[in-house]
Image (cartoon, rainbow, N blue to C red):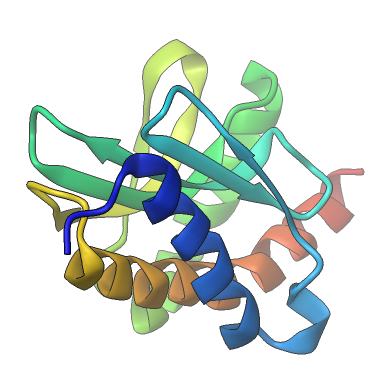
Length: 145
């Protein structure tokens, strides 16, 4: 069944929450320009993002570093040094510098349309990103704060 973006992202949020360990269920979300959802644990500059790229027919799932240039570079360096560990849990994950001095650790899923199948795969993928990366992100934040 085809889903409106608001329904898709609400379903994504609802689908991820019960699949996370109890200690990770207290997250915050925000919706961006219609086809975007951000999820974070109190540090909005470092957030998980689901973004539907309609023109490319892809859904991006990843951890974005969108703080200061120095913080973004430090996060990039931290995760680059741990990519073997990251890839053990997220074999399709890629780390790259991005727009405006930001960086992202992400993958994309086929998503010509937002439907139940894409939602199921997105829940699986985003859950994997949070479970795999949040402990590392907390380690990074603990070292830099």
